[in-house]
Image (cartoon, rainbow, N blue to C red; front, top):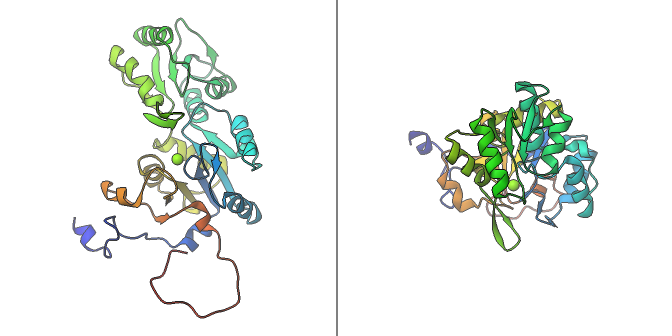
Length: 295
Ligand SMILES: [Mg+2]
């Protein structure tokens, strides 16, 4: 509490204003960028995202799109971006499925898995040297899926009872989809945990392993990197726990009013990712009065 008393006055009920300037963010060499709520909402690209990506390329910044979804492969994500009008190579995507596959390869190279998930997850596991086994796998791996059924649930439970380790690609419990709320991976793994009494090990943000893997992929040091995300409980906490500068954008899940619920704050808060862009150069003119904005 004492710490808060030392901070500048509060704005809109939130914690103290950002402690970093946007110029600090702009000067970073490497960018870890969340997707939904930062780049797009579903199938709708957010304003000036194309311009921001052009700026990243022009400035020779290193960047990776990081998503907790394990449903799509980097190739499918690259195709989705292309449909939205943006061309980004598949080597610029890192998913919780890749994080999970990398982790499992370090645990048991060449092991076997029973998977409840989609192609993004099975492809990542095959590529990491795993094979599929429905009878006595080393791991039961649960990821995002739209084909969750009783039969698979029974197989997963019985495999865990026989000794398979229970792994979950990401902790997200729900997501917004067609018609409203849909269950996500965290909700799908819960019945297996409940019946077996075993707690899954969960990859994906906020697990700092995902940040370390992304840094390795970018060949970047954490002090030269910023993570940009729309969720305090995944993106921002993942950055904080990995000692990476954090940038919260208000274009997604978290609103400024909700910031007060958290005992931590991001390094900077922006309305959207395009606010990182340098201001357009224009002839000198008198500066208007009023409070300074972040830009
Ligand atoms: Mg997001």
